[in-house]
Length: 267
Image: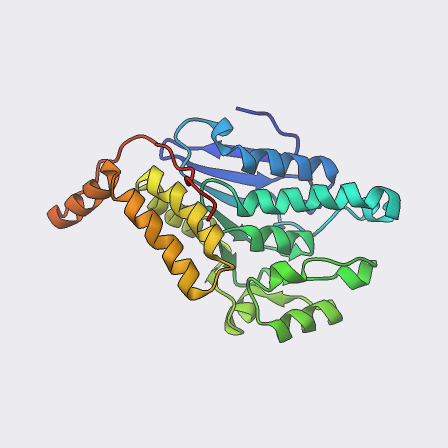
């Protein structure tokens, strides 16, 4: 398993990895940590055999309180382009990770922390966790487009322009698709959902992750046609018939080891 400076990894026998952001005191992300996030989520199978799903959580009292402010202070138009590229690579590595990623959010998830959480497939959060975009308070931009995956545009603008954070419970009440728990049960609920994912065909889950990423920005007709093409392709895989047979026989399915999951075309 690859060693990381700012990430802690625990992979269990079920194929569920708990990845902890670990840069005390508030898990603020610097350039080294951005590189490590990109590396881990681009290549999750390097963590160990049988990877099925990842739970992403913060070590200590916070999920992630944002970008390292010292790096913002030293950013210029000359060095900023590469730095921002590193940031994007980290966020999109999470979103495009071959296996599903569940964000487990507690404490603060601000700026970069909010974007990391929003890059996950879905979020389980302590009801008292605070999510926000304090970018204007520190003289930068960013995060609004990621927040738009969770909140309607007027709320995105309110949070951006005011810099005021909301609790996870308040965001959920405004329509954000966040699973709300208490602090004690947050990680357990995220792991429960990850274990449920791990129980499905690993080939189908990885293919499904690719399909969902592709159709997110498509219109209804094009997106559904895209899904149907992969329904047809998956029908030729033994796991497809095994899933149906096990469902009818009311027994656990016995799936094959991970197979080829790369789409044959980009159409």
